[in-house]
Amino acid sequence: MTQNSKKFVDLERLNKKIIRCRKCPRLAIYIHKVSQEKVLRYRDQNYWGKPLPGFGDIDAQILILGLAPAAHGGNRTGRMFTGDNSGDWLAKALYDNGFASQPTSVRADDGFRPIGAYITASARCAPPQNKPTREEFENCFPYLVEEFSLLNNVRVIVCLGRIAFDTCCKLLGIKGVDFAHGKSFTHKHLTIICSYHPSRQNTQTGRLKWKQWTSIFEKARKVLDSK
Image (cartoon, rainbow, N blue to C red; front, top):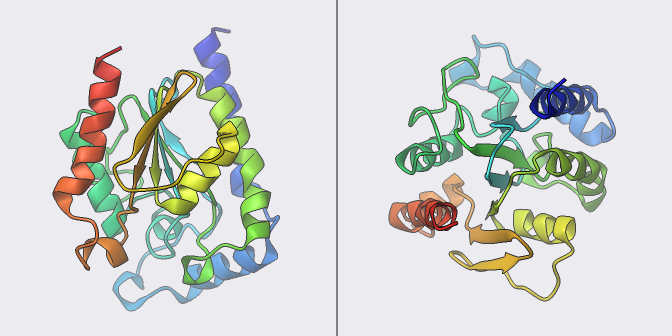
């Protein structure tokens, strides 16, 4: 078995473990309830309603770290950043900078494929009010540790929001660095880039404008192209 084949098998094994996870009763109940009750515009669709693994290129050089799946986005479609406004923004920015096969991420079988990129999150279940508890983050953290250990070509980590940034700092043992949109710094062989999360709360209020957003991935591209 080649190194890449083993990495693929190990990631598949991890992803199956994530999908089966029921460590957090509150979240397990919530995502099941959402998948049954749905919302009117998606009433004819079958919801995923389970924890979500990360996805992307196993040889990724850029890791995108978000907060958690959206109740009617990833929790519905079965793929992170798919089928909601945040997914729209991420897919377009990735595509424009050569990190994705197409500019849209609508459903799990739509042909969207990260190129040299891997997408994951601090929590794997959609939480009520988009707020996982500290214990729920702790329960999910070992999955990220294992995932990151397998993605051993990563050179850039893009943190979408303060919570993702805090998770990244915990993962890498970074201390004494504050979050700010557009901020970047190096840690060992890695470049960490901070961004506001492309949530509706940020994009529709103008806190995060498109130029600010796409500049994050332009910066990541420049870092990778310069080495």
